[in-house]
Image (cartoon, rainbow, N blue to C red; front, side, top):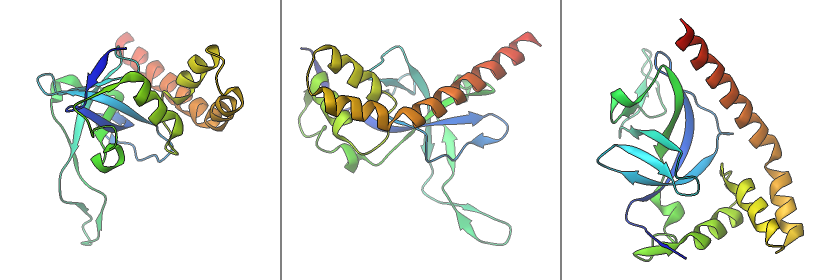
Length: 174
């Protein structure tokens, strides 16, 4: 099985953005393990390599309301040319959450899949990994439980993707 270098592996939050309104705050959005390509300033999903996301970075200070109350953190797009009017973006998470994955210079895909399946976090690819493992006839009861536990979140994510894609189609028709 091929080895994946861990130096640019990141845990990312996937978020919806609107170029005019910013990034949506939604705790039900999934996470993914991604490879960061610094030349392109994009994240590539390790499980589904054809999926890539523009990189948003957190600025180390918070937003401030006119009343002086601070909230959240500001984000900036690493390459503004990569974002459309609407879409999905990636925001890097705390590396401590995946320090075990990064303990060695390289890791096998199977180990990344095991990490995702055993995590309490909601990963975009968790259900598809579980389905793939079901085909191998291993731990069927546990895998069915994983698929069922994430069903609502997966449905909500798919509905948001459908909405975004329909809005993009409307923009392109104009």
